[in-house]
Image (tube, rainbow, N blue to C red; front, side, top):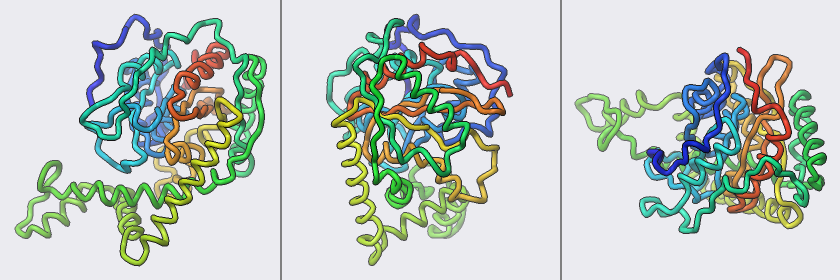
Length: 363
């Protein structure tokens, strides 16, 4: 999908910081190239796709801002479909203001995407003022995102961010989203099931890679064997199994029911708060290839981002510190449906009150 540059008020884009570079091993997701490019000052903004955290996790690992909008707010026309009920396009930028400007340019109804919402799009950047604080805002801390498995350095940085929000006038309270913990197993049934269906179209006939072979069936087989990597094949096989006769009700249908429970947890939480807060990832960036042979460990990196996609909510990751190795730490803010304006205002107030957006990892 092309970005409508003509619609962007370029003079509003904040000046990028100098950087000493970013190692691509620290990207952290399928939109890691977009995050690394922004962090390395190769471009002022980039677009990413977020199915279970692939905008927000790379943003956290690279020390930039990543925004996953409400499901349907931004057209997905032109995006290679992975899991159609979860995929969403969003911006990766150096600052919250830049994210607001880009969101205003790309959001809106598109007749070529039947899931895009036909609503009026506000000027998201118009309310982001230097004097903005969090007085009157209610922020909920999700208790399930703290504890075992969370790197102590990440825990400390996020709790320091919570204290900063209190100094900005926010009313902070802890609350529970008990179904949150089931996000990963639910996602890894629903997403592969949809991927199995969506990626079936890549058969070497209509478009894309085509392996040559005398037999049509062998051409199909060779094309998909060559064109898909090990992880993609693994997810297609999981999804095909979950959708197969005799297993559909036991796996896919049950996962959809749990998805509803996760969504209800969020709905209940937003009855008492404006924004939810948690770490973006349990750890800082891991080295390139470190978890290739341990897919389960890699899946758990999405622990805190996946539930947001299952519920179709907007969420934003922004820097909140660095670990002892100089790697960025991400703070995740979650908003209610179509409450991007509130989400951006809260994030902007924190960003302007802290120095993290002015620093880059020195790698």
